[in-house]
Image (cartoon, rainbow, N blue to C red; front, side, top):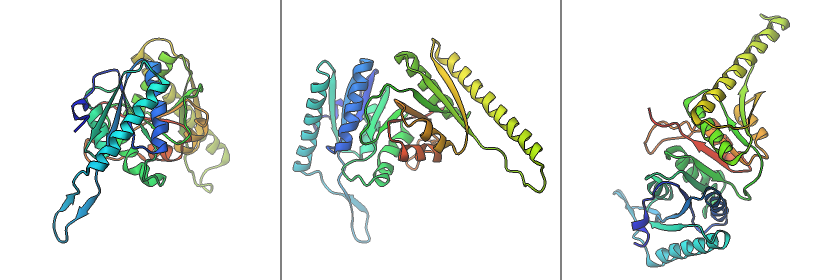
Length: 303
């Protein structure tokens, strides 16, 4: 099949998934600008997976790949290459048409050292969050490299990079990614953490004690946030402009509010391991489903 020989990529490559939908075109444009800015190669991937059919009281089977469907896939890749060439004529572009489920195809191509995977939040079957769960979330949860999910209407902006911090190994990885990007692009990074004052029954605690407890909770949260930023600074090296924001509230709500005008919103993954049922954490899921701009999901390296 055309493109199978190009299913492995080297370093300094950005992998982007397409399927011919308008939303995948938005993701392609974002990935093109990203590759051009980073002087990286661009690998365009179309995972062509036929619907499953069930034999009565028997095993499931996969419909054979029809020539017209294969031809459509190649047309999509050809059009994607032309679209990239119009925007970035000097960009090195490869295409891969794989008979794989789209998330599996993207992960296969990216498995040999890609620095980033870019996907749209919806595709041809796009019904909002239903389609998001079937491709984008699975890629974000399983990929070893960062994954950027680009919703409709997104484009490269000049705003800050906003990253969620909660002290976990995944948020530490997200913070290192955000700071390294801020350093390379000379862009401000806003490290955001959310906290909630502990619940104390009113009949047992006087208002003054509640105020003291709340202030201590905030102090500890702010201290942990600064410590996380210091760890990330030491890990990446080089100067980077970082500010911190500590807000009371639900983490997803705080991130979405502060990240409305961000160039990129960065969150850590909560993957459970390299298995098919692997899921993102609830905060990552909520941010992916509701963010108006691109979201990067970063996983911590295996121990």
